[in-house]
Image (tube, rainbow, N blue to C red; front, side, top):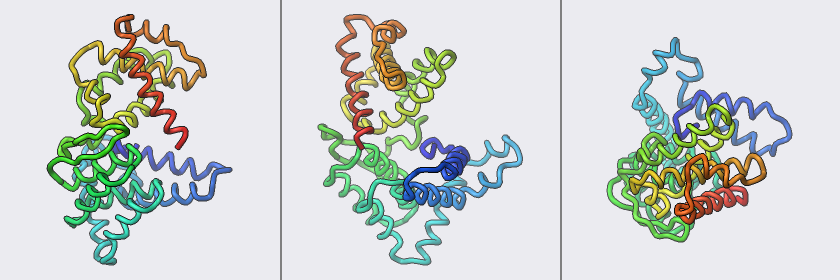
Length: 279
């Protein structure tokens, strides 16, 4: 939700989670901290706009300005604030606090932040989603040039200026793959589409710049069908507990000649899902 700037929905979800019972105390502390940060950073969402028209008129630039002012105020109160944020990101566990610290680092006018983050990316083995968050922070900081890092088994070179800041900024081919799943599921299996949307958003961030990612951009209609079918297949299997491969392949007209590439796409998604469960 934060990735897609759905701040109001994120606040509602956090308030709901805080009312739930039986969770680890640390979870409640992290949820409360995240909620308080959102309420402070986006007070206009808390109070509620006078109309939908007014809500639509709130620009990203306004939100960025508010966040920048908040961070600058913190820095004025504490000269070591930048170092504390870097320490939270680079030496703490991967939690909501890490994401919040990265968001704030984007608004600090300190060149040493770019150096620290790029060095960390190159030298440390990080979770691919954390890597992507760091790349987004570097882009928000208006860094230019390339960053070389290890993504899984691959060494990739990523141009910071082109790193998407939201799902809508990904290439059209990436968006079309999800649209094809929507066409097959939105009416009869809306729950499946919801989970497919969430999984796809996370997956493309995790594989950004890799061979799998670049393969989606080859301009071939069959490639879009293959990845859409694999996404549908993996989510259906996760929700229902059984794999209906033949049925799903028929939805997207995946022929026997496309089978090898289809299985490769399915394995990539399966590996990502399995890694998430293990984490």
